[in-house]
Amino acid sequence: MDEPMLVALPRSQSGVSQEAPWDIWRRHWLIAVLACVAASCVGCAGGIMPLATGDSQVQAMVDRNNRNLRRLQVGMFQEYVSDIMGEPQRLEAYSWGMAWLYRTALTNGVRGTPETDLTPLVFDQRGILLGWGRDFLSDHIKRYE
Image (cartoon, rainbow, N blue to C red; front, side, top):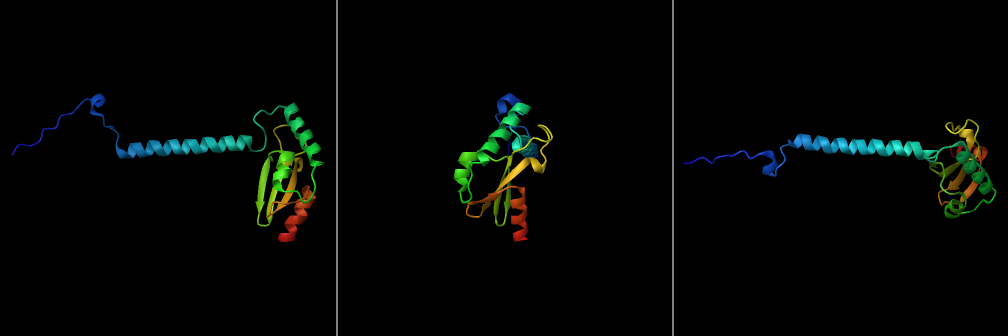
């Protein structure tokens, strides 16, 4: 019986990857990990501050947030609050609802954002604005502990 003859084609003509399955899996895994790391870095960098973080831009955001706070009323739905205030700088979820935090002060410059620079807007589970301010949030958290 004649044995089949195997002829090695040059890599460019074979049409089949010469990589082992482990190498292919490792490359795809590495790409996925790098994509996740890049996405989380972008998320962290843009989480509190806008991408362009000049002092005047942050101060303009603080002024705008303070002006818009005066337009809010208890009982508003989240959608209407979002139309007035825009996107919050941070979100905090609780079992009883949610707090949206907006920067309303600039005490440590552009890079530093202490908790006291953020004003929370407190919503119940239905998305209705209950009130705002650090003291209001603190009292509301104590009520549900």
